[in-house]
Length: 408
Ligand code: PMT
Image (cartoon, rainbow, N blue to C red):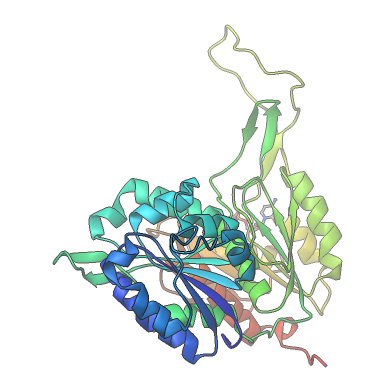
Protein backbone atom coordinates (compact mmCIF):
# COMPACT_ATOMS: atom_id res chain seq x y z
CA UNK A 1 0.00 0.00 0.00
CA UNK A 2 2.91 2.33 0.56
CA UNK A 3 4.77 1.24 -2.59
CA UNK A 4 5.64 4.27 -4.70
CA UNK A 5 4.31 6.73 -2.15
CA UNK A 6 6.30 9.89 -1.43
CA UNK A 7 6.51 10.37 2.33
CA UNK A 8 7.85 13.41 4.14
CA UNK A 9 8.95 12.38 7.62
CA UNK A 10 9.25 15.34 9.98
CA UNK A 11 11.47 14.66 13.01
CA UNK A 12 11.43 17.03 15.99
CA UNK A 13 13.24 17.36 19.31
CA UNK A 14 11.99 14.48 21.41
CA UNK A 15 13.73 11.45 22.82
CA UNK A 16 11.38 9.36 20.64
CA UNK A 17 13.35 10.67 17.63
CA UNK A 18 15.39 7.46 17.79
CA UNK A 19 12.26 5.63 16.60
CA UNK A 20 12.36 7.70 13.38
CA UNK A 21 15.13 5.37 12.17
CA UNK A 22 12.71 2.39 12.39
CA UNK A 23 10.03 4.38 10.59
CA UNK A 24 12.34 5.29 7.71
CA UNK A 25 13.52 1.69 7.40
CA UNK A 26 9.93 0.34 7.41
CA UNK A 27 8.76 2.86 4.77
CA UNK A 28 11.74 2.16 2.50
CA UNK A 29 11.25 -1.60 2.89
CA UNK A 30 7.65 -1.16 1.81
CA UNK A 31 8.73 0.62 -1.36
CA UNK A 32 8.05 4.24 -0.35
CA UNK A 33 10.36 7.19 -1.06
CA UNK A 34 11.20 9.05 2.14
CA UNK A 35 12.37 12.63 2.56
CA UNK A 36 13.32 13.43 6.13
CA UNK A 37 12.92 17.02 7.35
CA UNK A 38 14.31 17.77 10.81
CA UNK A 39 13.97 20.65 13.21
CA UNK A 40 17.25 21.93 14.72
CA UNK A 41 16.28 20.26 18.04
CA UNK A 42 15.53 16.99 16.24
CA UNK A 43 19.18 16.83 15.11
CA UNK A 44 20.27 16.82 18.76
CA UNK A 45 18.46 13.54 19.33
CA UNK A 46 19.36 11.54 16.21
CA UNK A 47 21.98 12.33 13.58
CA UNK A 48 20.93 13.37 10.08
CA UNK A 49 23.59 10.90 8.86
CA UNK A 50 21.58 7.96 10.25
CA UNK A 51 18.33 9.08 8.64
CA UNK A 52 20.00 10.12 5.35
CA UNK A 53 21.68 6.71 5.11
CA UNK A 54 18.47 4.79 5.83
CA UNK A 55 16.38 6.90 3.43
CA UNK A 56 19.11 7.19 0.75
CA UNK A 57 18.28 10.88 0.66
CA UNK A 58 20.03 13.89 2.21
CA UNK A 59 18.13 15.14 5.24
CA UNK A 60 16.73 18.66 4.96
CA UNK A 61 16.72 20.96 7.95
CA UNK A 62 17.72 24.40 6.69
CA UNK A 63 16.16 26.68 4.06
CA UNK A 64 19.46 26.76 2.17
CA UNK A 65 22.86 25.15 2.39
CA UNK A 66 25.60 27.36 3.92
CA UNK A 67 28.13 25.39 1.89
CA UNK A 68 26.91 26.02 -1.66
CA UNK A 69 23.77 28.14 -1.26
CA UNK A 70 21.42 25.36 -2.50
CA UNK A 71 17.84 26.45 -1.78
CA UNK A 72 15.50 23.85 -0.29
CA UNK A 73 12.03 24.66 -1.52
CA UNK A 74 9.43 23.84 1.11
CA UNK A 75 6.77 24.52 -1.52
CA UNK A 76 8.13 21.90 -3.97
CA UNK A 77 8.53 19.46 -1.12
CA UNK A 78 4.95 20.03 0.01
CA UNK A 79 3.71 19.36 -3.51
CA UNK A 80 5.90 16.26 -3.97
CA UNK A 81 4.47 14.45 -0.94
CA UNK A 82 1.61 11.94 -0.95
CA UNK A 83 1.62 12.19 2.81
CA UNK A 84 3.47 14.06 5.55
CA UNK A 85 4.12 12.38 8.89
CA UNK A 86 5.56 14.25 11.85
CA UNK A 87 6.91 11.62 14.24
CA UNK A 88 7.85 12.39 16.88
CA UNK A 89 5.97 15.68 17.16
CA UNK A 90 7.13 17.65 20.20
CA UNK A 91 4.83 20.02 22.12
CA UNK A 92 6.74 22.94 20.62
CA UNK A 93 6.29 21.79 17.01
CA UNK A 94 2.60 20.97 17.63
CA UNK A 95 2.18 24.52 18.98
CA UNK A 96 3.97 26.07 16.00
CA UNK A 97 1.95 24.04 13.51
CA UNK A 98 -1.31 24.94 15.22
CA UNK A 99 -0.47 28.63 15.18
CA UNK A 100 1.33 28.94 11.86
CA UNK A 101 4.72 29.85 13.35
CA UNK A 102 6.87 29.16 10.31
CA UNK A 103 10.34 29.61 11.77
CA UNK A 104 11.88 26.37 10.57
CA UNK A 105 11.93 24.14 7.49
CA UNK A 106 9.59 21.56 9.01
CA UNK A 107 6.77 23.97 9.85
CA UNK A 108 7.06 25.85 6.53
CA UNK A 109 6.89 22.51 4.70
CA UNK A 110 3.81 21.59 6.75
CA UNK A 111 2.14 24.90 5.86
CA UNK A 112 2.85 24.35 2.16
CA UNK A 113 1.82 20.70 2.16
CA UNK A 114 -1.26 19.81 0.12
CA UNK A 115 -1.12 16.13 1.14
CA UNK A 116 -2.77 14.61 4.22
CA UNK A 117 -0.77 15.20 7.38
CA UNK A 118 -0.35 12.75 10.27
CA UNK A 119 1.03 13.89 13.62
CA UNK A 120 2.39 11.48 16.25
CA UNK A 121 2.91 13.48 19.46
CA UNK A 122 5.60 12.44 21.91
CA UNK A 123 6.17 14.21 25.19
CA UNK A 124 6.02 13.95 28.95
CA UNK A 125 2.60 13.19 30.45
CA UNK A 126 2.08 16.63 32.01
CA UNK A 127 3.07 18.43 28.83
CA UNK A 128 0.68 16.25 26.88
CA UNK A 129 -2.17 16.80 29.35
CA UNK A 130 -1.62 20.58 29.51
CA UNK A 131 -4.65 22.50 28.19
CA UNK A 132 -2.48 24.46 25.75
CA UNK A 133 -1.11 21.26 24.17
CA UNK A 134 -4.61 19.77 24.02
CA UNK A 135 -5.96 22.95 22.50
CA UNK A 136 -3.19 22.94 19.88
CA UNK A 137 -3.91 19.29 19.03
CA UNK A 138 -7.60 20.08 18.71
CA UNK A 139 -6.74 22.97 16.41
CA UNK A 140 -4.68 20.62 14.25
CA UNK A 141 -7.57 18.14 14.17
CA UNK A 142 -9.98 20.88 13.20
CA UNK A 143 -7.67 21.76 10.27
CA UNK A 144 -8.10 18.19 9.02
CA UNK A 145 -4.81 16.74 10.29
CA UNK A 146 -4.80 13.19 11.64
CA UNK A 147 -3.46 12.84 15.18
CA UNK A 148 -1.95 9.45 16.02
CA UNK A 149 -2.70 9.27 19.73
CA UNK A 150 0.33 8.66 21.98
CA UNK A 151 0.38 5.60 24.19
CA UNK A 152 0.29 5.32 27.95
CA UNK A 153 3.42 3.81 29.43
CA UNK A 154 6.94 4.34 30.67
CA UNK A 155 8.34 7.75 29.72
CA UNK A 156 11.93 8.97 29.40
CA UNK A 157 11.40 11.14 32.49
CA UNK A 158 10.92 7.99 34.55
CA UNK A 159 7.25 8.82 35.01
CA UNK A 160 4.41 6.73 33.69
CA UNK A 161 1.47 8.11 31.77
CA UNK A 162 0.14 9.16 28.38
CA UNK A 163 2.70 10.73 26.07
CA UNK A 164 4.81 7.89 24.61
CA UNK A 165 4.89 8.10 20.85
CA UNK A 166 2.89 5.35 19.19
CA UNK A 167 5.16 2.45 18.18
CA UNK A 168 6.61 2.66 14.63
CA UNK A 169 4.79 -0.55 13.53
CA UNK A 170 1.47 0.98 14.60
CA UNK A 171 2.22 4.26 12.82
CA UNK A 172 3.07 2.35 9.64
CA UNK A 173 -0.26 0.51 9.98
CA UNK A 174 -2.14 3.81 10.29
CA UNK A 175 -0.62 5.02 7.01
CA UNK A 176 -1.23 1.67 5.33
CA UNK A 177 -4.88 1.76 6.37
CA UNK A 178 -5.13 5.28 5.00
CA UNK A 179 -3.85 4.17 1.61
CA UNK A 180 -5.67 0.86 1.92
CA UNK A 181 -6.92 -0.75 -1.24
CA UNK A 182 -9.95 -1.90 0.79
CA UNK A 183 -12.22 0.07 -1.47
CA UNK A 184 -15.33 -1.98 -0.78
CA UNK A 185 -17.55 1.10 -0.99
CA UNK A 186 -16.46 1.98 -4.51
CA UNK A 187 -19.45 3.03 -6.64
CA UNK A 188 -21.56 3.60 -3.51
CA UNK A 189 -23.17 6.95 -2.92
CA UNK A 190 -23.55 7.84 0.73
CA UNK A 191 -25.34 10.77 2.32
CA UNK A 192 -24.15 11.79 5.78
CA UNK A 193 -25.63 14.53 7.95
CA UNK A 194 -23.45 16.03 10.67
CA UNK A 195 -23.21 18.81 13.23
CA UNK A 196 -25.89 20.90 14.88
CA UNK A 197 -28.57 23.09 13.35
CA UNK A 198 -29.08 26.71 14.32
CA UNK A 199 -32.62 28.02 14.51
CA UNK A 200 -32.64 31.80 14.32
CA UNK A 201 -34.48 33.87 16.93
CA UNK A 202 -33.33 37.20 15.50
CA UNK A 203 -30.33 38.32 13.40
CA UNK A 204 -27.91 37.76 16.31
CA UNK A 205 -29.35 34.85 18.31
CA UNK A 206 -30.22 31.24 17.68
CA UNK A 207 -31.31 28.00 19.34
CA UNK A 208 -28.63 25.37 18.83
CA UNK A 209 -26.87 22.45 20.49
CA UNK A 210 -23.35 21.27 21.35
CA UNK A 211 -22.73 18.99 18.37
CA UNK A 212 -19.21 19.59 17.01
CA UNK A 213 -19.67 17.54 13.83
CA UNK A 214 -16.71 15.28 14.75
CA UNK A 215 -18.67 12.01 14.62
CA UNK A 216 -20.32 12.78 11.27
CA UNK A 217 -17.08 14.07 9.71
CA UNK A 218 -15.23 10.94 10.88
CA UNK A 219 -17.91 8.83 9.17
CA UNK A 220 -17.60 10.86 5.98
CA UNK A 221 -13.80 10.43 5.92
CA UNK A 222 -14.10 6.70 6.69
CA UNK A 223 -16.63 6.11 3.88
CA UNK A 224 -14.62 8.18 1.38
CA UNK A 225 -11.44 6.35 2.44
CA UNK A 226 -13.11 3.11 1.38
CA UNK A 227 -14.00 4.44 -2.03
CA UNK A 228 -17.53 5.85 -1.57
CA UNK A 229 -18.75 9.10 -3.07
CA UNK A 230 -19.91 10.99 -0.02
CA UNK A 231 -22.20 13.97 0.27
CA UNK A 232 -21.80 15.50 3.69
CA UNK A 233 -24.60 17.84 4.69
CA UNK A 234 -23.25 19.74 7.65
CA UNK A 235 -24.66 22.24 10.07
CA UNK A 236 -22.41 25.07 11.32
CA UNK A 237 -19.10 23.53 12.52
CA UNK A 238 -15.45 24.56 12.40
CA UNK A 239 -14.18 21.31 10.87
CA UNK A 240 -12.77 20.79 7.42
CA UNK A 241 -12.87 17.70 5.22
CA UNK A 242 -9.69 16.24 3.75
CA UNK A 243 -10.81 13.54 1.34
CA UNK A 244 -11.42 14.66 -2.25
CA UNK A 245 -14.42 12.29 -2.62
CA UNK A 246 -16.43 14.23 -0.04
CA UNK A 247 -18.79 16.82 -1.43
CA UNK A 248 -19.77 19.19 1.32
CA UNK A 249 -23.09 20.99 1.55
CA UNK A 250 -23.13 23.56 4.34
CA UNK A 251 -26.48 24.45 5.89
CA UNK A 252 -27.57 26.33 8.97
CA UNK A 253 -31.12 25.42 9.96
CA UNK A 254 -33.08 22.17 10.19
CA UNK A 255 -35.24 23.39 7.33
CA UNK A 256 -32.16 23.83 5.09
CA UNK A 257 -30.81 20.43 6.16
CA UNK A 258 -34.19 18.88 5.39
CA UNK A 259 -34.26 20.29 1.83
CA UNK A 260 -30.65 19.23 1.15
CA UNK A 261 -31.20 15.69 2.49
CA UNK A 262 -34.50 15.18 0.64
CA UNK A 263 -32.86 16.35 -2.61
CA UNK A 264 -29.74 14.17 -2.26
CA UNK A 265 -31.18 10.95 -0.75
CA UNK A 266 -32.91 9.55 -3.90
CA UNK A 267 -29.53 9.20 -5.68
CA UNK A 268 -27.87 7.50 -2.68
CA UNK A 269 -27.47 3.87 -1.65
CA UNK A 270 -27.10 4.67 2.02
CA UNK A 271 -27.79 7.61 4.35
CA UNK A 272 -26.25 7.97 7.80
CA UNK A 273 -28.01 10.65 9.83
CA UNK A 274 -25.59 11.77 12.49
CA UNK A 275 -26.67 15.41 12.76
CA UNK A 276 -28.19 16.72 15.97
CA UNK A 277 -31.18 18.42 14.35
CA UNK A 278 -33.23 20.90 16.37
CA UNK A 279 -36.71 19.51 16.87
CA UNK A 280 -38.22 23.00 17.19
CA UNK A 281 -37.60 26.47 15.77
CA UNK A 282 -38.94 29.89 16.74
CA UNK A 283 -42.33 30.44 15.15
CA UNK A 284 -41.19 33.88 13.99
CA UNK A 285 -37.71 35.27 13.35
CA UNK A 286 -37.50 38.87 14.46
CA UNK A 287 -36.14 40.98 11.56
CA UNK A 288 -34.21 43.22 13.98
CA UNK A 289 -32.29 42.44 17.16
CA UNK A 290 -34.78 41.93 20.00
CA UNK A 291 -34.27 44.64 22.61
CA UNK A 292 -34.22 44.10 26.34
CA UNK A 293 -37.70 44.87 27.63
CA UNK A 294 -38.84 46.21 30.98
CA UNK A 295 -40.56 42.94 31.89
CA UNK A 296 -38.48 40.24 33.62
CA UNK A 297 -39.61 37.38 31.39
CA UNK A 298 -40.02 36.91 27.70
CA UNK A 299 -41.16 33.91 25.73
CA UNK A 300 -40.37 32.56 22.31
CA UNK A 301 -43.06 30.49 20.69
CA UNK A 302 -41.66 27.37 19.01
CA UNK A 303 -42.99 25.25 16.17
CA UNK A 304 -41.92 21.74 15.26
CA UNK A 305 -39.28 21.20 12.56
CA UNK A 306 -39.73 18.57 9.90
CA UNK A 307 -38.27 15.22 10.87
CA UNK A 308 -35.62 14.55 8.21
CA UNK A 309 -35.09 10.97 9.32
CA UNK A 310 -38.79 10.10 9.35
CA UNK A 311 -39.23 11.63 5.88
CA UNK A 312 -36.31 9.65 4.43
CA UNK A 313 -37.58 6.56 6.27
CA UNK A 314 -40.96 6.95 4.57
CA UNK A 315 -39.45 7.57 1.11
CA UNK A 316 -36.79 4.86 1.43
CA UNK A 317 -36.68 2.37 -1.45
CA UNK A 318 -35.99 -1.32 -0.82
CA UNK A 319 -32.51 -0.86 -2.32
CA UNK A 320 -31.58 1.89 0.15
CA UNK A 321 -30.24 1.65 3.72
CA UNK A 322 -31.04 4.25 6.35
CA UNK A 323 -28.90 4.54 9.47
CA UNK A 324 -29.87 6.86 12.31
CA UNK A 325 -28.25 7.99 15.51
CA UNK A 326 -29.87 8.34 18.92
CA UNK A 327 -28.44 10.57 21.59
CA UNK A 328 -30.05 9.60 24.88
CA UNK A 329 -29.72 10.49 28.53
CA UNK A 330 -31.90 7.74 30.09
CA UNK A 331 -33.84 4.59 29.09
CA UNK A 332 -31.33 4.50 26.31
CA UNK A 333 -32.04 1.14 24.66
CA UNK A 334 -35.81 1.48 24.86
CA UNK A 335 -35.77 4.99 23.41
CA UNK A 336 -33.32 4.06 20.65
CA UNK A 337 -35.39 1.02 19.62
CA UNK A 338 -38.53 3.12 19.55
CA UNK A 339 -36.78 5.68 17.25
CA UNK A 340 -35.48 2.90 15.01
CA UNK A 341 -39.04 1.71 14.39
CA UNK A 342 -40.74 5.09 14.23
CA UNK A 343 -38.25 6.49 11.70
CA UNK A 344 -37.95 3.22 9.72
CA UNK A 345 -34.17 2.98 10.20
CA UNK A 346 -32.35 -0.22 9.26
CA UNK A 347 -29.79 0.39 11.98
CA UNK A 348 -29.58 2.90 14.81
CA UNK A 349 -26.36 3.98 16.54
CA UNK A 350 -27.00 4.74 20.19
CA UNK A 351 -24.74 7.01 22.22
CA UNK A 352 -25.53 8.13 25.72
CA UNK A 353 -24.55 11.27 27.58
CA UNK A 354 -24.33 9.17 30.74
CA UNK A 355 -21.20 7.45 29.34
CA UNK A 356 -18.03 9.41 30.13
CA UNK A 357 -16.30 10.47 26.89
CA UNK A 358 -19.35 9.81 24.71
CA UNK A 359 -21.61 12.10 22.70
CA UNK A 360 -21.16 15.80 21.96
CA UNK A 361 -17.78 17.41 21.43
CA UNK A 362 -15.45 14.65 22.64
CA UNK A 363 -12.87 13.08 20.33
CA UNK A 364 -14.14 9.73 21.61
CA UNK A 365 -17.47 7.95 21.57
CA UNK A 366 -19.05 4.80 22.96
CA UNK A 367 -21.87 3.41 20.85
CA UNK A 368 -24.23 0.46 20.60
CA UNK A 369 -25.50 -0.57 17.17
CA UNK A 370 -29.04 -1.91 17.04
CA UNK A 371 -30.50 -3.45 13.89
CA UNK A 372 -34.15 -3.65 12.85
CA UNK A 373 -34.40 -7.14 14.36
CA UNK A 374 -33.39 -5.76 17.75
CA UNK A 375 -29.89 -7.26 17.72
CA UNK A 376 -27.42 -5.20 19.73
CA UNK A 377 -23.67 -4.78 19.18
CA UNK A 378 -21.91 -2.73 21.86
CA UNK A 379 -18.55 -1.13 21.05
CA UNK A 380 -16.01 0.10 23.63
CA UNK A 381 -15.03 3.75 24.17
CA UNK A 382 -12.64 4.66 21.36
CA UNK A 383 -11.77 7.61 19.14
CA UNK A 384 -14.53 8.84 16.83
CA UNK A 385 -12.29 7.86 13.89
CA UNK A 386 -12.18 4.28 15.18
CA UNK A 387 -15.91 4.29 15.95
CA UNK A 388 -16.58 5.43 12.37
CA UNK A 389 -14.45 2.59 10.95
CA UNK A 390 -16.23 0.05 13.17
CA UNK A 391 -19.66 1.35 12.14
CA UNK A 392 -18.66 1.00 8.47
CA UNK A 393 -17.29 -2.54 9.07
CA UNK A 394 -20.62 -3.43 10.69
CA UNK A 395 -22.71 -1.94 7.87
CA UNK A 396 -20.59 -3.62 5.18
CA UNK A 397 -21.26 -6.98 6.89
CA UNK A 398 -24.90 -6.39 7.72
CA UNK A 399 -26.47 -4.33 4.94
CA UNK A 400 -26.97 -5.47 1.35
CA UNK A 401 -26.58 -1.90 0.02
CA UNK A 402 -23.10 -1.73 1.53
CA UNK A 403 -21.91 -4.96 -0.14
CA UNK A 404 -19.07 -4.36 -2.63
CA UNK A 405 -20.04 -4.18 -6.29
CA UNK A 406 -17.92 -5.57 -9.12
CA UNK A 407 -15.72 -2.81 -10.49
CA UNK A 408 -14.42 -3.52 -13.97
O1 PMT B 1 -21.10 16.12 16.54
P1 PMT B 1 -20.38 15.49 17.73
O2 PMT B 1 -19.96 16.52 18.75
O3 PMT B 1 -19.28 14.56 17.30
O4 PMT B 1 -21.46 14.58 18.49
C1 PMT B 1 -22.00 13.46 17.86
C2 PMT B 1 -23.50 13.31 18.15
C3 PMT B 1 -23.70 13.12 19.63
C4 PMT B 1 -24.26 14.56 17.68
C5 PMT B 1 -23.97 12.05 17.32
O5 PMT B 1 -23.25 10.94 17.74
C6 PMT B 1 -25.46 11.81 17.52
O6 PMT B 1 -25.89 11.13 18.42
N1 PMT B 1 -26.30 12.38 16.61
C7 PMT B 1 -27.77 12.35 16.71
C8 PMT B 1 -28.21 13.29 17.77
C9 PMT B 1 -29.70 13.44 17.83
O7 PMT B 1 -30.20 14.47 17.48
O8 PMT B 1 -30.36 12.38 18.17
P2 PMT B 1 -31.99 12.33 18.27
O9 PMT B 1 -32.21 11.17 19.14
O10 PMT B 1 -32.54 13.64 18.67
O11 PMT B 1 -32.43 12.07 16.77
C10 PMT B 1 -32.62 10.75 16.25
C11 PMT B 1 -32.28 10.69 14.78
O12 PMT B 1 -33.21 11.48 14.04
C12 PMT B 1 -30.90 11.20 14.44
O13 PMT B 1 -30.40 10.36 13.40
C13 PMT B 1 -31.16 12.60 13.91
O14 PMT B 1 -30.17 13.00 12.94
C14 PMT B 1 -32.53 12.44 13.27
N2 PMT B 1 -33.36 13.66 13.24
C15 PMT B 1 -33.81 14.23 14.40
C16 PMT B 1 -34.64 15.32 14.35
C17 PMT B 1 -35.02 15.84 13.09
N3 PMT B 1 -35.82 16.91 12.98
N4 PMT B 1 -34.56 15.27 11.97
C18 PMT B 1 -33.74 14.20 12.03
O15 PMT B 1 -33.31 13.67 10.98
